[in-house]
Length: 200
Ligand SMILES: C[S@@+](CC[C@H](N)C(=O)[O-])C[C@H]1O[C@@H](n2cnc3c(N)ncnc32)[C@H](O)[C@@H]1O
Figure 1 (cartoon, helix red, strand yellow):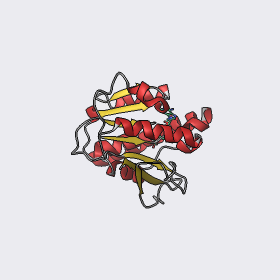
Figure 2 (tube, helix red, strand yellow):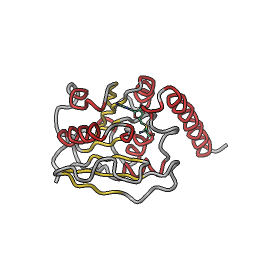
Figure 3 (cartoon, protein in one colour):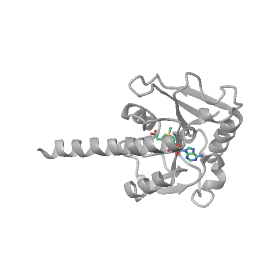
Figure 4 (tube, rainbow, N blue to C red):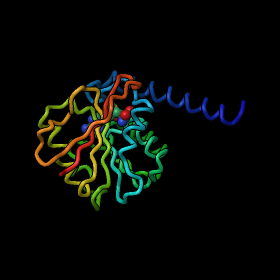
């Protein structure tokens, strides 16, 4: 077996292990997980494309799970030492710490973002990327989260969110916030779309 095919084989096994971990967590807490399997690589790469590696400052990821979007950001050239990963599930936190030892992994509640990041965030963030299942939360909770997140970002910096819903998970009437959406990512299971929100 060539080195390349051995590497591909190892990567496939890793993905399979992650699928099993994810399905187990979904069986335990379906509303908290919001998905049965981790995001596929097309969705993860679309999320990462909205993160500019040439900015400075922390990159925050909310609900990284087993880390497919984290991996896509690393592939894009983002230094894991800049990353702050906020995850509610303790098992995923252990996995993320082992995979990205340079990143800051915070075991906490992303819906209490300012408080959760109080001890680790000392300057405006360059980007916030979110895999949280927003649609399982009431609209007021979603709006509060996005407002809190935008307050932690540098002016004009993006809050990037994926959703399986056909509409924006954040009402487009949110004052002072402009949004844009990616094309649907049909190759993800289920198909998804990426939304980006910025302060005007
Ligand atoms: C739909 S999964 C997305 C996982 C990963 N980003 C992906 O794309 O495969 C949602 C993730 O958000 C995490 N999560 C849910 N509620 C959370 C909260 N309040 N704070 C932090 N993480 C949370 C879940 O544990 C899970 O890992």
